[in-house]
Length: 388
Image (cartoon, rainbow, N blue to C red; front, side, top):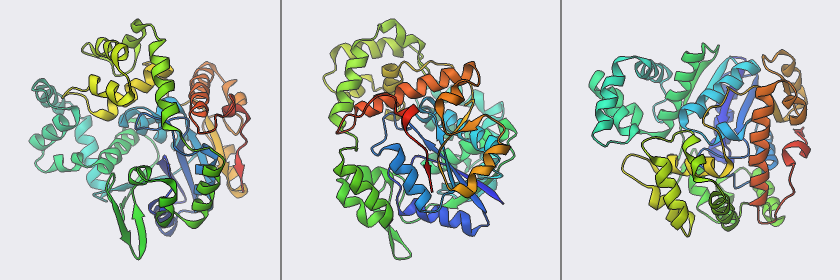
């Protein structure tokens, strides 16, 4: 291993993330690249923290280069999120993909990925879905039926994402070796814990707390960055986010909903009806909820509808550098995709690049509207990369 990659959101960057970077370095990585969600997050929302704050926190803690996972992919299903991140890190030249897992056994996760890519699982999956099971439950049950015990790997969130990374590596023939690392101290979505005397908490748990209460669970340098961003009014204002989403949805032609990714079985009609009646985002999600669709999928659907994200997207066509150590910048010369710090220049490299850059900048403008202190438009083009 020389050049390791990590796919992350870092919202917020915390002690567990710092420990992961240290573990990757200890495993032999000479350079570590992070592909970080930009403009949106996978839970179907926008980042609590500004992009530059998250980038600087990562670089300060040991990352060498941070590239963008553009918003249309950042707010997508686990499969598309993983595929886009793998594509970008492979194009950057990484030889290893590191990720946390409840079962830190890369070979077992690769075996699960191969099983999911086989044809025999699809018949069982369809039968399970026909009974009303969620997709995740139906897939885990199908895997268990074909290979007893395999379904357990598909019932925990980090394993699920790790398997999606492995699927993407196999499907793309990417020259990436998976490195599964144990999740330390705190489970995904769980409460606080500790490891080796260091307090740990998941990002989802921290997001449920007031920002000052994050401090025991984040590196000291990151805590300073977060405090400064808070004082400057740069954190997410949930009320602004809610109003902005509902306003955009109410302005939509309901016919547009049928063109969204992930829409099937009349879900567009359910969304149109919910938009007409909902008086809050939680009310909207509740009206959309069925046994078939998990909450996270519906949140992503709502954000897609608000931002008019099309159903079909090309693979990420460029590498936008959000931040780097000066010593890592020469690696961009060997990238297999157009790479640089200026989005405007990258968008001129082809029609797919123009399309993705436009969708990404729209999401960044939307995010800028949702800060406690509303930010100007165009930050996707005017914000400078963080170089240390």
